[in-house]
Amino acid sequence: MEFFLRQIYPGLIEVGTSWVLVPFIAGLFLIRKPHKGKLFWLLFLLVVAAVLSEGIGQLVVYLGTKNNIWLVHVYTLFEFLIIAAIFYYSFRRPVFRKGIILAAIVFISICLIDAFVLEGITQMNSLTKVSGNAMLMLMSILYFYKVANDLTVTYLDQDPIFLLSCSLLILKAGTTMSYAMFNQALAASYDAARICIAIILVLNILYYTALIFILRRATT
Image (cartoon, rainbow, N blue to C red; front, side):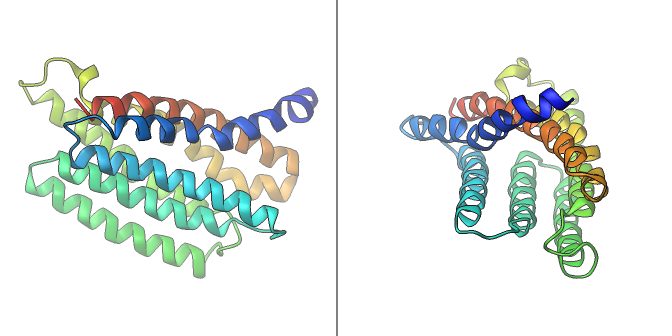
């Protein structure tokens, strides 16, 4: 563990924070392709939001700010709303669409309460992360249900929303426990908190890599 934290973890931080540029650059190349619809632009907006979050986070650290956790609160909200919009336009049944709108309203309320009443904007938003992850996983499972009942879908690997749903399930299920434990781990020791961050970084790298293929599928 000592070897990992001292030798591997610093490099993982560098790769994990910069890897979001990979799908961003891929998206810039794909913009030139025809047949781009609303789905592509929402997915690209999701990538842009991640790039801005990482970039502003690095900037405020460079400027000497000791705490940039507030950015996590902001990004968590925007990420959820963008993904919710993607699922909203992917469903046709009114009950699913109304459920997504309700989930967005509930999530906004949780974000505000968590940031200004409960954990505070200078602490990791564990409650917001866990609740948001649970809602996004439920949306992904609902999309699986939709696909299972859609006889027109032949090749699932050609469906960008199916690929996004798979990626979200892996990412959100894998990072939920890390986010839930982060504040307690940080209170115990910095090394315990770094383990939580390492898990999140590895899963984010896999997720950003998957976004390259998802963006590609959204242009076809």
